[in-house]
Length: 201
Image (cartoon, rainbow, N blue to C red; front, side, top):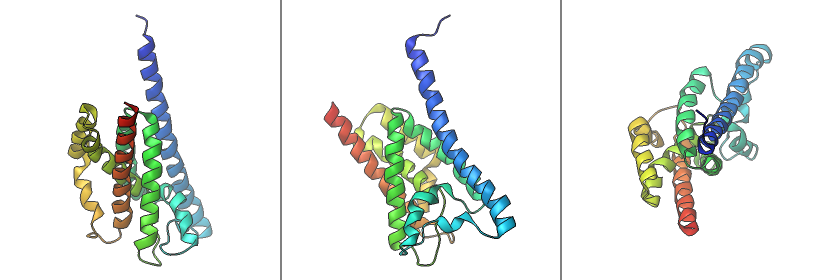
């Protein structure tokens, strides 16, 4: 049986989405392998210094680099699965949504952390962006009122709804600032994209 054009298009889009997610994860894993087995053990340095350092001018570079840096493999593993799952859910309707939400959440998380984080600390990890995906998926249904958006919000709440508590300053060593502002960035992205679709009909 020959596949239809629509089936080929869907399969191609899924491959494209898989490639994007796998590529970003591969960058984070490659950097952590270099950090753990080359830099830390040989030169006693670490890539973590490129994270967000609140209220420091040089620490602003971390807004770009921090999502790809992690403290150890446990930290990276803990972020890999939700990044892939939530990132793919963001992509489900439009792959371009993933890039828009990632950029808004990354900037919001990074700038918020830089502004209110404790001076002298270093903030790294993809969790700010992940919380952006969470905020986007949970609130998109509210702004958009479509069956798909509401369904994805329900699925997200079932799978990762408990993560919302991570925006509160309860756990030592966790960048709640990044979580909070990433979540806010995701909500803003949901509002922006919903309004854009309404204008587009």
